[in-house]
Structures are given as C-alpha cells and as structure tokens.
Image (tube, rainbow, N blue to C red; front, side):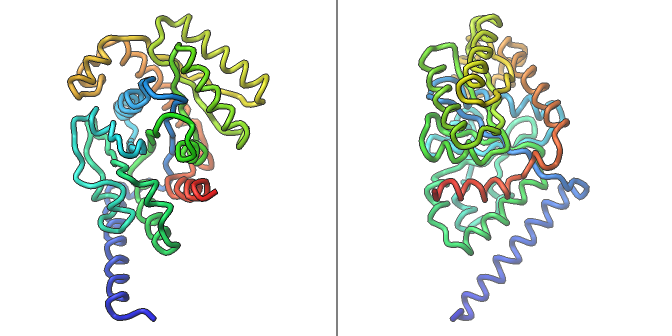
Length: 303
C-alpha cells in the first residue's frame, strides 16, 4: 500500500514534469511536429565519427535547424571533450528523476544543446515499468525544442550500439578508405539488413584523399549491399583528409569554430545542406520523435 510519503513524492514528480513541459511549450508554442532522430555510428573506432557528429550538428544549426546531441558513447564523453565543456548533469540524472531533461541539457556552440549519456544504457534496462514511463514522458520534451536529435553511439557491433542503430529514424554510417574500416562498415550494414531491410542508412566517407576515391567507396558499398543484402544504401557524401581536424581536436574546439574555412568543414556544410533538404522533404511519419525512439530502444535492449 502506498504511504503518504510515496504519494507526496508522486505529486511532486508530477508537478516537476508539468513545469518542465510548460517550459518547453514556452520555448516553442507553435511547433507540433516530432523530431527526426539520427544515429551516427561506425563499424570500428578511429574513423572520426564524433567529429562528424559535432561539426554536422553545428552546420545544421547554421542552417536554422534546432539540434540536440545525445552522447551515447557511454563512459567516453567524447562530445564533452570536443566542446571543451564538462556538463554538470548526465542522462542518468533524468533516468532516476533527479532532474528533468531540460535541466540536464548543456549549452554547446551555435545554439546547439547536448546531453552527456553517463552510464545511461546500463541504467535504462534496470528501470521498473513506472520509472520507465516517467523517463519516457520526461525525455519526450526534447521533441518540443528540437528539429533534429543526433545520437553519437559507440563504435563497433555490440548489442548496445545495434540497439541504437535499429531504434533511430535513420542512420549515418561513417567509414574511411582503410580496408578494415570498409569491412567493418559492411559488417554493420549486414547486421542491419538481417533485422530491417527498409532501414535508412546514409553513408559518409571520412578522411578521403580525393572525391574520386570517396565516390568509388560509396558506389562499391552501395552496389554490394544491393546485390547481396537487398538493402538500398544512400550516399550522403564525403569529407576530405584535412590536417585542420587534428589541430581542432588538440584545441578542444569543433572544426566549425576553429577552422570554419577549412576544406573538411566545407565538405561538412555540403553534407548538412543535403541532410537539411532531406529533412524538409520527409513527412511527419518519417520523423517518429524521441519518445518513440526510446520505446524502440528499450525493446531492442531487452531482446
């Protein structure tokens, strides 16, 4: 039986969530659409996935889209490092109802918001049903303040990474011209194809020597996936090898801020314009929002 203290906590939790919802509505009282949830991933580490995430988010923000990044590379906090910002709270504070999602959002450059994942996945699967429902209602507030939610996953083919990949509206798969990177990217594509041949995967070749090399990789991966996996890949584009990227990382600044005229960031801008045009063209049912994403994520994590 629920005692008075438990009942009081429920009332306080409900009031906190209503206040957060009111805050989100004040930020945008007109918008009713759900956000597009994009997972950025790679078959192996070292391909520059997090760099792509951060700079693509900034480029999309420069185009007028409201972007939130969720760092789901749990434990490594790569987004924090690239922004040179240490958030006060993480997603774990939302999971255990210590904070609402709007309180946990950290301010990044160019109006970007980001959330550090902490040990979120491990904690998420431990929740009881009523705790999970409360968390889902809480994180759903992100749909009111964002157009695109970009989730930076860990690298590789672990169950956790694949759960994020399969739960997203679409996937950005980053590879490089290295043979091992291409092989691992194909392995990830194969795992997706076995689960859902209609999943939208957009390919990005990072650190390419030139456009010819990049387009050759994009075309070959697309052809092999179509022929052997019956899965249609989408080529989003490429980012050329650029020493400015390494310099920016050492400065703990996104390339977009430290070297905005660099070749690599010009390539990122091209990717962002393509992605933004696709975002405008998609219908409401293609953008299922963060609430639906979390529901699918938990389902995949528990299977």
